[in-house]
Image 1 (spheres, rainbow, N blue to C red):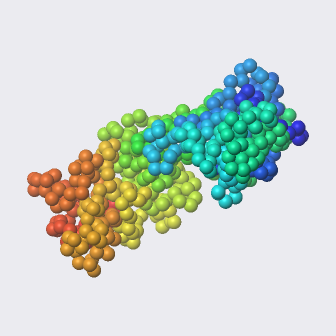
Image 2: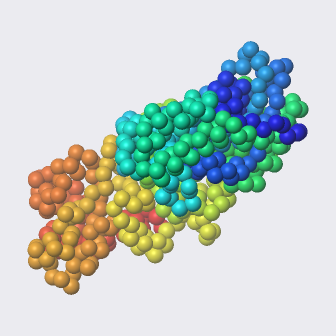
Length: 579
């Protein structure tokens, strides 16, 4: 391995464009935020070191033995985050990037590509929430942000076309056209940047000439070149360079190793594709590669399921690849089941709770209709109860392997029912117990509307609900009444108001209600709405029992008694279910 002649950023970008630089399967995908790219360009302009690079010279006869990817060219936070697979059937020689992918991709996106990220407070499924952005440089004034000298920003076309006395946005990629120094001057003259106030004209002149020079002329890409075509050696170099730092996540490293060792399937495509698919199930989830890789270790029945390089050896990877179709289906069925329980990215507070479910479904030989068939209803009820108890008790916090291994052992002994009683018994009197004490139950009532754990707490009370329908967390006494001003207006004594404001948003004033009835209820007085919704006395009594509504006057001035009595009813139910 030796240092080679340094090259310019323009040369590096051209090599990416011509596909002379590719990414080996052991590489992670692009993960930099726009701010990191902007800061990298600022460092370039200021002459700061940007670190060395490591390339691997892949010979023609060797290139077909491994898997490679192209650089991502137009990054889209939702729709285009995966590198396309490289077509190397022609066996042309190229350089594989072992260290430096993030920086090289940043150079390419800044000069030739684009970066689309979600606007604040916009919905994920809204296409307009992800405008295409180009890297731009303000030629009139320095950066105002502390620690930066040059004002680089990713801007939409509408943003970079806006100009005033303080801003003239130059698309950084246009500098590639300045292959002669005089073209910088031509640009400044054509855009009347030579006739503005002197201090700004000088800044624009200095800034644009500096950008052109750092892209075209300065050989800032210093790289080592590994010429030995030995994957094992390259893998060891890769691990040595990346496993000790924080820039490369451990799951990326393990996925890279799996990708390099799978023989028939593309581990990166399979695993990333599965992550995308399960995250789109139901109302959306937030699974990642860590979850899929950990589940693969557990479902493969490896004794050691630790998340470490040693467990991602050739033998283990061969087993996972061989069983991948079943593992993938088990994960998908577990996610569908969890979605049918009403969970989503906001309410599923630990993804690891799905791993035993996937293992159990694998043992059941992956029944497609498990999440909806009446044949499995009792089994589903037991699983839902176990999910809720495990989530509320934070059973998978700390070291989840200490929970996963014993549960897997229990599940491996049965094939036709989910052994919730055995699991509860196994963890009794341990730090992972999912049995609730009276204090635990009392603490449930501190949960507020919209908090992550509130859904689980409420769902436990409604085991017969079909959560495939959309349910809302509903304030029984509408929240519109609960301001100091309104409570005083409705005649609530001032010394009670603090308690009213404390309890209205907490568990004892919440219920799960289907979307349509909840919209109909809206801000109506609860007592009035209940009479309208359920005029039949017998049906109304059933509704009240189902929702733990106490038989007290349902008026606002009786709110604190309502809370006290409803809490007692709920506590009785929780004790039956949880103790």
